[in-house]
Amino acid sequence: MAYVSSGTTDFDSRQFRTAMGQFCTGVTVITTIDADGAPAGFACQSFAALSLDPPLVLFCPQKTSRSWKIIEAAGNFCVNILSNHQQDVSATFGAPGTDKFASIEWDPSPAGLPVIRRSITWAECTVERVEDGGDHLIAIGRVTTLGEMLQDKPLLFYRGGYLSTEHPRVTPAQAELDDFLTWTGGDTWL
Image 1 (cartoon, rainbow, N blue to C red):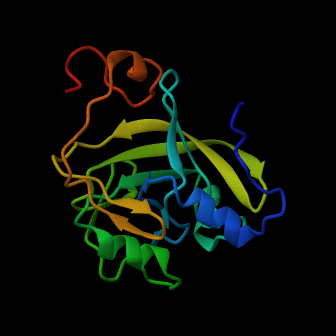
Image 2 (tube, one colour):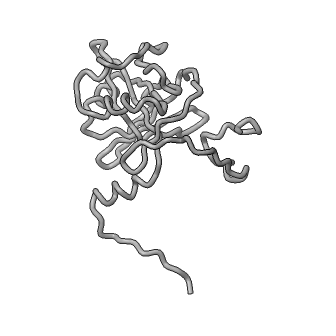
Image 3 (tube, rainbow, N blue to C red):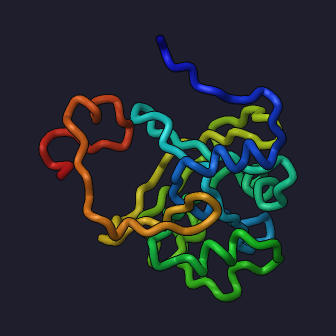
């Protein structure tokens, strides 16, 4: 007799959010400069590498996001991948407010976009295209510049809170990694 998993087709947005919270994500801050030269940005956990050739990434802003409207108008953005020591940065950019950069140290990227200090790395991008994604948008960006990579652990979000990667690393078998976009290849990934 085969086991059949049970589930429900009758769920609300809270149940859906809770179920999707079982997936651990990294935390980024997407930044840009507005038409008046002021920095803008928001915390984003719905970020992913999309393609190696061409180098594309994606993130999913809410359709109602004021920061997204500024990024879309600017046509470029910087993805700041936060370190485990930047929970305060995540909290600042995840909360509503106008001057999120007042307490944040940052430097300009080659295109003048905000690079948040002590981020693990960053990627400067141009907006390639935008697709509809329900109550969010799917913004696809072409990476034009990569920042230096710091030796630190990432800030992770899981089940509504931050999670540490302090546990021993478990290395998957080679066959498991062949289709992972972010695997560096060869024997140097260890």
